[in-house]
Amino acid sequence: MTDSSRKKFIIGLAVMLVAGIVLIATAVHVQAMSTAVQAGEINWPLVEAALTNQPASGLAATIPPPKQEPCLSCHITGENKNLWTPLARWLVFGTFGLVFAFGVYRSASVWTQRKRWKPLTVRAAAWVDERYQISEPLSKILKKPVPKYALHWWYCLGGITAFLFVVQGLTGIMLAFYYKPTAAGAYASIQFIENEVRFGSAIRAIHSWAANGMIVICVAHMLRVFIMGAYKRPRELNWVSGVLLLILTLAFGFTGYLLPWDQRAFWATTVGTQIAGVIPAIGNLALVFLRVGWNVSEATLGRFYALHIIVIPLATVALMLVHFMMVRRLGVKKPL
Amino acid sequence: MTTPNPETEKDSIPFYPNHVKTELYVMIGIVVLAVIVGFLGLLFPVGLQAPSDPLNTPMHVKPEWYFLFLYQILKIIPPNILGIEGTAFGVVSIMAALVVVMLWPFFDKKEDSKKATWIRLAVTILGLILVIALTIWGEVS
Image (tube, rainbow over all chains, first blue to last red; front, side, top):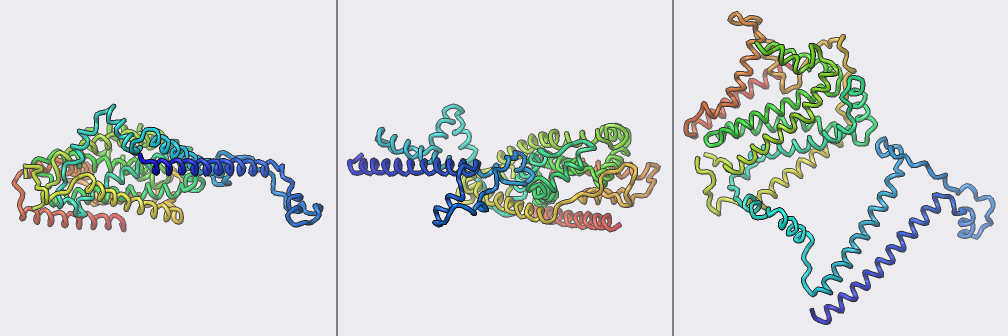
């Protein structure tokens, strides 16, 4: 390293040090001021009087309201934002602090070691690879070329279905935080999600519409594969796993439809399970398995909930892995 | 068609980053759509019907729209076919059709041709028209 660049490093360090001290001092000052204001330690009439050169008496109207009691559940019900103000402040100042500390460390280490700085991402990748030895097989998978014809939009349908499944998983987890799979609680909890939870109706709308979209795109993907003959040898088993995935998607729809526990849900499930009951030989078994008894009841709700959030998702993820691995191994079929 | 991937360099692109990037754009598009749907959901929530009441059957019980065509088939099927109860016959034939669809690659083993593609396209369109017609029929009936 030359002398001039070393000098620049020292100057840079000094500037960052001064900036950091100023930043920390500002943060401490703001925190102290806001604490004082909230605790009512500042005599506002006196401040006002000093600023406007007026006598202190008769200015009591500018006293701020007393500090509100912090409400920890209010971020859900949206009554006030007291919790977010300190959180946001810590986030902002904490980020600045981390960036500052990183800058100091980076400059100091370059200065002392006299080597080029290695980016953190490269270091992290090397650290992980040393322990898992994953980069060689991974790059083999990642470098396998994809034919150019696989960039037409209709080859995206399968990927869209998979991503919609991820969307469903994420929004479903969010809904599961508030949903109660009981006869007494289900309807009320959906009402709570729709009316009280912040963005609850948005999450429910995404979950509901993406479910319908997933079925449409899934069927479109299947028809695309059928029309182009991509199910033929050696891809037969991929077609079979795809049909199983479609059945699982429909099972998602069927079990999820009961969960709001309103009239439509209850009677659609009653009729649906009734149809399962007319299968010869195993009909009654299927009906009792689905309803957990002879009628749709709270037990049915619990069973459908468990199927909807645990059993079917696990089966879907497993089949999706098989499906994707076969696609990567066999490649996309060349169109005629 | 049995040789999976002997593509030449100029006909193919690397999976990473090129193809992954395309998929990423698709994902971003879906996320944008989802945010729009969520925003509309704030204005027009999905909503709920009256709470469930086992003693009060509503006039028109309908399944979700994607089961509607199957439901309509079961509704219009005659009550007795070949001495078997109509609904049972319908359910069994629907399940049999599903099994045939699932195992279709093992039935259709011929080498693929342009003509076969056109036939499959025609079959798909006819089937789609049938399903859509049954769905609409089920929706209005």
